[in-house]
Image 1: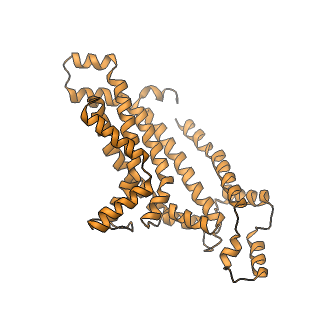
Image 2: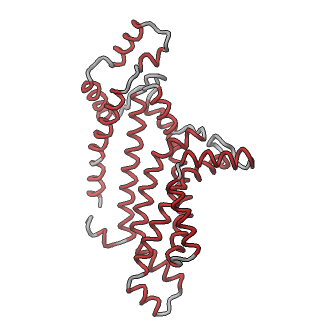
Image 3: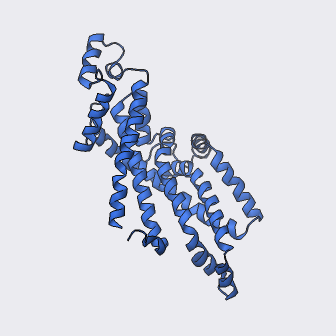
Length: 309
């Protein structure tokens, strides 16, 4: 198992290289001058050129990219922000807590709601509850997060006044962002749980358990759900990784000081080191979550563990 974990961690190297190159190239060809943005429109051309030389923006593309990657791997240095002149790693560290908390609350909301609904839909296939749940799941998957967030603010903040419309320091401020961000995950997890459970409950050993007189709850929660967990765990892990990236618009709408909002502001200012640092943080977090999911497989299904020994 240790060898497998080390192997997966080594896979992060090409992931970081690939993501860095793509984002670096996109920012490089995007119109705009980071030096001009940093100094303002009233700055002279001489001052702008001097700052570009200081930032290394006059160097060729490959030289800039190579210097950045060298600092990342040799010094664990994500660079310095062009705009704030502060450490990119420090800025990300200060804001990462809000983004991780938002993603965790959203996936918790999705799991607590999606898995039970999916199980009930599978047990009562084609019932009224099943049909209504699948309709709402389809709506949840189709509804953009930013639009749902605005609707929640209009209803629960503006009209009813139940929850604040911005901030993320108090529990009441976390409800609407978590619901808005986790709504799509609820739909995805519900559909996957239903599909996985339907496949399992039709197996012969489930019918045998029922024939032996096992109670419905025991058959469903012990025999059926235990064997249906692999795809459910997979989709939960994938959704958590996507929520880290999907938090971008949610943080902007609800004014949450997280990685997503920092990334949006940095893109507007063409702050290349900050954007790269945010993207790398999300990419590495996503990879680590996938590794944790793979490790969880071995506890859900002991047969998988033999492959890693």
